[in-house]
Length: 174
Image (cartoon, rainbow, N blue to C red; front, side, top):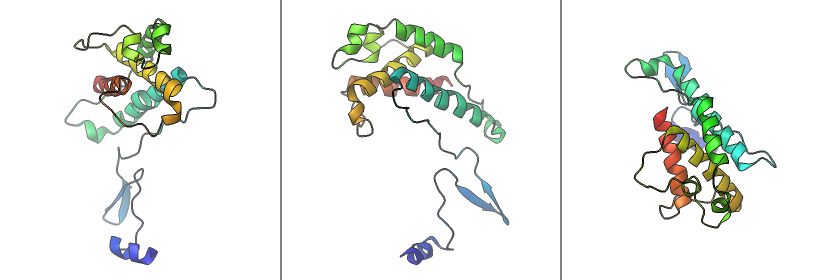
């Protein structure tokens, strides 16, 4: 069966993996820059949702962006992205600290509501998006932890809307 799969691919070479796509250039092989998956650390046992959310921010919106900036060929015709500054995360954590605890504990809680961001037409500042992201991760892990990995996006589940909105807005700020 393995031989049959190799014949279907053509020359018997291994299929390129998602993290190391390769292409042949003359006789050489070069790894395509920018094709590496973002590596996110796993949540450690006993680690709070807030601490884990900060790790994800560091991995995705800081370290991964800095790796992209290093790929000079990508930025010849456009501006390179900018990693989110640690000071913004600190401001977000101050907002998270001021979130209404009673709103966080109730079933159906959303991060935006706990932060007082109730105007659905308002444009959130970067630190507000970071705070919504951090609280969304915390609520998801604390109240829906057993379902993590099984949850899909549901536009009627306000917490998932908060999470996706904050995550995409943060990327657009980079």
